Amino acid sequence: MKRLVTALIGLLLSQPSTAELSPATIAMNCRNCHSQNAQDSQPLSLSLQSAQEIRSKLLEFKYNPKNATLMPRIVKAYSDEELSAVADYLGQH
Image 1 (spheres, one colour):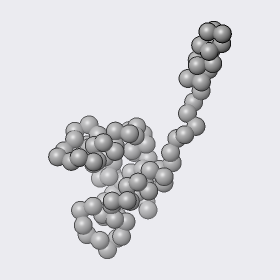
Image 2 (cartoon, one colour; image 1 turned 30 degrees about the horizontal axis):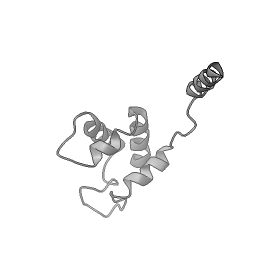
Image 3 (cartoon, helix red, strand yellow; image 1 turned 180 degrees about the vertical axis):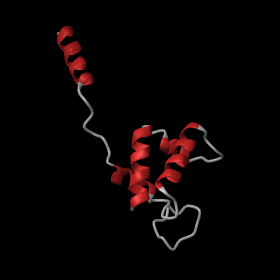
């Protein structure tokens, strides 16, 4: 029985995750706080920033937290690749 349980756990751990989030899904989280209105000139507006600017800020929050409480916590939940993909998505939409 112990061997069966160990084998099942090994099998489950070896399977790729199917719960990956799309950039559009991650972007919905961003838009809870950040404006998507092109006419909005507030610092939180994402529409005024390029994909490169967004990517740079996301990675800065992840690896060099500023005096912020929420963003460093949020970005740590995503891989660098996911952050890059969402920056590209936000830069186009």
